[in-house]
Picture 1 (cartoon, rainbow, N blue to C red):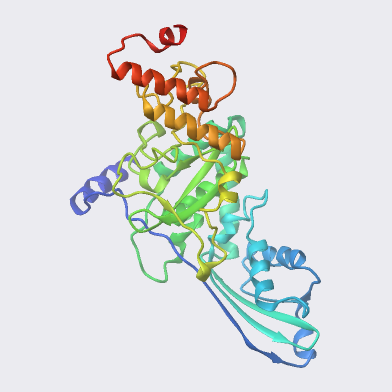
Picture 2 (picture 1 turned 180 degrees about the horizontal axis):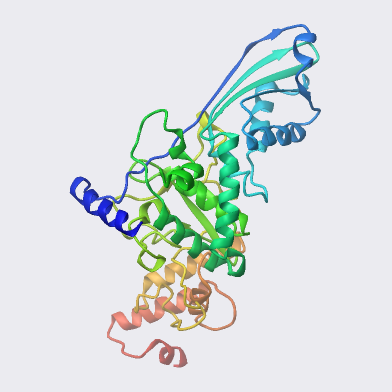
Length: 398
């Protein structure tokens, strides 16, 4: 595998400039046939339809159909509900996050297309759903078995969350290559199955595999889609309640996490390796309403992403009071980070900075990060800028 990676890396260097691998993701289609709805005989509908009285019950049914990769199914809901809104709400409920690793984002990003045809018998609406996926039920059985094997082989259950993330990430970058076959029939490239069985995938398959493995061993994780030199997908994963950004697709020519440019980064340093190709998470998309709007305050509050990269060495050790961004200079940038952390704590209850940064930010050491800390840092910055030579700790004692 290492030899193969070396050969591919050498070949890529001859043909590609300025990027590690192409950015590629898939956007599935959602179409409905609802205007006008057609009145039909009840016998034409009730024979195969699953009937529900609530959106939540219908969503659970649809989730199970997607999870088992059913391509056609029918359900009904009372006609008192709004037809199109109900269809949207059922689909959103079907792909919402759960505790199960083979649901949520895992099934959302395995959907290739959704087609809904509606009918009405005077009492109930009937939803005829036709779905296409990137994988089959049989292929998902392979994924299930392979994932169980990897959990054992990588000894994931014995590790803490950071250790699990490291082991999963290193497995992916050492065993999965980028799939350049753009044949329309090559749907597997968009899936975890393609990454595991074929040993190659595009970013959607990379991020889906990371999500599946992380969630299976209890690591909070999401798939993020958007753009990065083209359509792209990556992940966020949490340690101690704070999320960090990872992009295994763009790290495939590294051997371990210490060499990676896109591993466990924060929102402010994720793109330091190549600022010209920033990762931009997608907002609302009315054409693909199932996809998450990552720009909302609700999403950011539920999934707080750190400002800066995770420090594998205990972040509570070796911090420097006042130097919040750890650049060996105490200046206005540090004050800005403190103010941002203060605002986040006030609004969300989370600072979005690491434990070491929190210690460095609490410059008056009163166990509170607030505007007073930022003011002290700015005062010191002004002092140094005009020729002051005292170290920060001595400045505080004046």
